[in-house]
Each structure stands twice: as C-alpha cells, then as structure tokens.
Image (cartoon, rainbow, N blue to C red):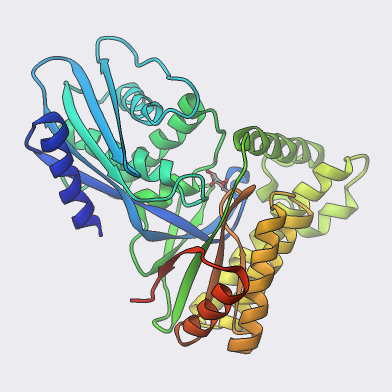
Amino acid sequence: MSHRLQREARIALQHHLQRESVFESFAPGRVNLIGEHTDYNEGFVLPCALELGTAVAMAPRTDRRIVAISASHGQVHRDDFSLDESPTPLPRGAWGNYLRGMVAAARNADEVLSGMDIAIVGNVPQGAGLSSSASLSVALGKLLQRAAGNAALPSPSSLQHVARWAQWTEHHYAGCLCGIMDQMAAAVAAPAEALLLDCRDLSIERIALPADWCVLIIDSGTRRELVAGEYNQRRRQCETAARHYGVPMLRDLQPSQLSKHRGALDEICFRRARHVVTENERVLRAAAALKAADLRAFGAALQDSHESLRLDFEVTVPAVDALAAEVNTLISRHADGRGGARMTGGGFGGCVIAVLERAAADPILTGLRQTVGQLQIFTVGLH
Ligand code: GLA
C-alpha cells in the first residue's frame, strides 16, 4: 500500500504541478487497540498501523515558496506560501494548516528549508478516529527532514522529533490539544504489530499480532461537530483531577487512592480520573494477554474499556454503543466469546474496533451486514 500511494503521489506531482518527484515519504493511519484518553495523562496506549495512509512527493523549487496540492478523497486543494514569513494559520479545518504547522515546526527546530513543490495523496477516512491528520503531518515531517538534508532513513530519535512537530501542529495550527499517541504511531508503528507506548518517556515495545488474530475496524458513519472543544474539555477535567489528587499527571495516581482521597472533587472530574486510572491498567492487562495470545482476556479488556469510555469518560455516542454491543453479541455467538469490540479513537462517533480469530471473521461480518446493513469495514491481519 505504501508503495502504491507513493507512486500515486509522484503521478499527482507530475499531473498537477508538472514536476518530477525527487523523493517521497509515507506514514500510515493508526487504529488504537486500547488505551483511550490516556496519552495526554502520560499513560499507556496500544495502537497499530493501518495499511491506509498518506504519501507525499516533492521537487525542489528555485524560489522560496512552498506550493502544495492535496489530491485526497476525490478532491484537489492547493496551498501556496512563502518561506520568508512564518506561515499564518488558515481557518479551522483547512488541510493546509497541517502543512503550514509542520513547516513552522521544522523551522522552529532549526531545520533549513528551501522552496518546494509538494503533492499529497491519502486514503485514511477523515473524522473516523483513524488519525488521517497524524498520517498527513508525519508524512510531511519525514519529507521536510529529508528536504533539509537529513538521512533518507530516519533514526528513531528523528522520528520522535517528527511526532513532536506533528503534535505541536495539532495544538497550534489545528486547535486540538491532543496527546502524542497518533503521531508516534504514524511515525514508528510497523504492519502486523501492536505498539505498546509509554506516553511519559516515549519508550516503545513492539508486540507481534498472533497470526490467527485479526482486527476489524467498522465505521459507524457517525461524525460529530465541535469534537476539538469536547476533547480539550476532557483534557482540562483530567488536569483538574490531577491537581486535586496532588499528582503531576493522572498516570501517577494509584487506583487505591481514587476513592480514598476523593474529598470534594466533583463527580465529573472523579469519573474522568477513574477512567484514566483503570484504562492504564487495562492497557497493561491487554498487552500481557496479547503476548500470551489469550484472546478471551484481550477481548474482555476491550469490552471493559468501552464501558468506561461510555459511562466515566462519556465520549461514546448511541450509534457507536449499539454497534459495539452488536459486534460483542456476534463474537459470543460465533467465536464463543474469544475476542471483543469497543469504540476506538477520540470518540464522539467514528469507528468500532473488534479483535477476534481470523476464522470467525467471515460469519461475524456476514452477521453484521444482516443486522446493521452495509458498513465501511477495514481490516488488519486478514490477508
Ligand atoms: C485522539 C487524540 C489522541 C488521543 C485519542 C484518545 O486521537 O489525537 O492524542 O488522546 O484521541 O485516546
């Protein structure tokens, strides 16, 4: 997939900007197996790379302009700005903000950039919780690093820098105070593995997905507006709770302290904290189950995570709750409960993820189409 998309990016550069590509880069979208809203609390997450992603091709210019086209989802958009000023942010929602943010971040890191023509193509669905924007930013960051004269094969530390630039871009050019999970996954996750990431020190452990497991990503088709506002509010509630408990981050709060030191902490912030503390435990439990290839225990952690996101963190929507419940019912019927499903990503709509045996995928997909109808479904580990 990455090679095919890079070829498409070369063709798009030639077609729309009449330039021959000098080099390309790619970054995947990601799906999070478990560990939701833990990253900005410096906790644990367990994402894996998708085959879908974003590819970028570039040719140098002799002036100091960045001219870019994005040919994704059947539409072509253009952005054009000078490197002589700091790139101004565009209105909220414009894709060009990711390019402008990444250029600003690279320059803040003292990378020296010259003008270039850039073509971008991608196939991660937008707003589905599969990190289309992190995939775009990280693909651009890798390209900018190389354009600034860095090695063609980036080192682990330069990939971490790219992930940080991409997070900075989300904060300063897209208005979402996100954590680091999506950007790290887009920068370092490889196919067929889950990435256990400690969001405090960015250390990673790569855990292979057992050959007989598969991941289904089922798009509910539901999207909600103003998600950044809700997201940023959850982050503030977590910070309020951490201050109340006197810990630097909710990562540092022991489960036994939650109720004991609750004091006058309001109900909402208490539940937010309870989600984060229990979710961190679930990630570690799920990672152990993955290593032991224990699908029943892994599935149970996914189902518990969904309930905590529904009741304590309140980021699910009825359509996603119903879809997750339906998939869990099908898993108990067709796979004797080996596996589980839950919402994935930031929430407020988007996708449900299910992890199950490959052998059970067909009857479950058939059952889903019968009960829910035609849905967009992506898979990891099915072919
Ligand atoms: C979004 C953010 C991530 C993370 C998830 C929730 O994807 O970009 O940083 O917080 O939501 O787990």
